[in-house]
Length: 483
Ligand SMILES: Cc1ncc(COP(=O)(O)O)c(C=O)c1O
Image 1 (tube, rainbow, N blue to C red):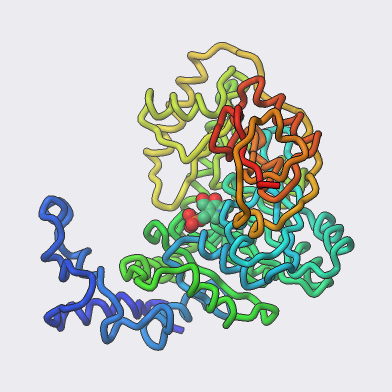
Image 2: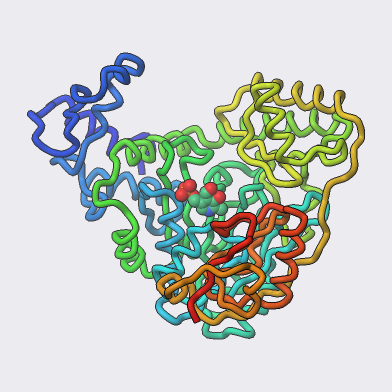
């Protein structure tokens, strides 16, 4: 196909050239009805792309022309059999992948540390999760990958399991052995679905691990908006093999996507795909080079370290996206939270996120050498000012995954009550609890609060550790399912 084409962008330009008298939604009629405070700053052009299913512009929910061709072009670039544009992020992609793979009462394997959209997918589908624990890397306290051996164990114990979902790469750039996992899944007739929210750029560089579809995944969802140039919320879902029922995926996408999909978002996907197809290799090479430059410099700063490919081969980690800089200043006594705050408040350097041990900088092709130099200079300055403090870390092993009483869907619809946390042992949980570090949930809605889980969480609570999930973060009270 001619990857220089931009069918949706071109169709919108043509519509604007004709500029019909407009009596549809949205009501701002091209640029005319948008607040002048906004148009005076940014001009009117962009608002002319905010249109709807007019003649010429096709319909995301029933594509026949411009959107159909734009999706076909995307499928070719990523090596997919079929691709769908998403306007509600990879959040809705994960929901659709899970809900179209396993139905009410069926089993699907999910990593214990999956994005919360996986839980929503389970609620929509009614499927029963078989949770798989990712490895844990001792060096940076990072959540690792899912190994093919772990997948084999799941399928041995659950031969009726319909599929396995993995997150690869993770937010921190950790990649699982997708090739090995797809072989394991296919030996058992199950589908491998990959949350590749953070990985669309990996298809364009030999210096990064291969993309999931190139390694045999049956389906994946990618946030094109994260590092590959489209606008926030725009993602793609790709089908990689005949094991997936594309019509069912499409039907599920009708449930989780707006009936008024944004043409701005879809156009940004059309244009990002063109850039990736024509210039992706050069762009991603630029991102990798910038990240390597940063890594070399950071490695030379006393007391500050950047997780590198050295952790590959441990904790289920098969590879690393080196454009993710996982930075630890633990050796000079700073938590990741503190490091991120100091970088922003003291140096005007804004990182993506932080946890107890690390702060995460994401390098993309659109970063500049100047951005990287600012990050390096700030880290050098921080390294010089801080003395050697105590190392940071918590090595308590996680409690075993507790038994479940209800599926996530049953738990979602069950009636609930709030009780003192002290009385929660043996009750059916209604709230997920993920103590940080390591941020892996120890209990999910529908599971029974086991003694081991209760004691692990209680120890965290007493030392006022960060507990993600419960409405009452201090955990004086806790929401359970009404018995
Ligand atoms: C691993 C993972 N999966 C899915 C998502 C959801 O993606 P989106 O923001 O495109 O909805 C995120 C968001 O950060 C994520 O980190």
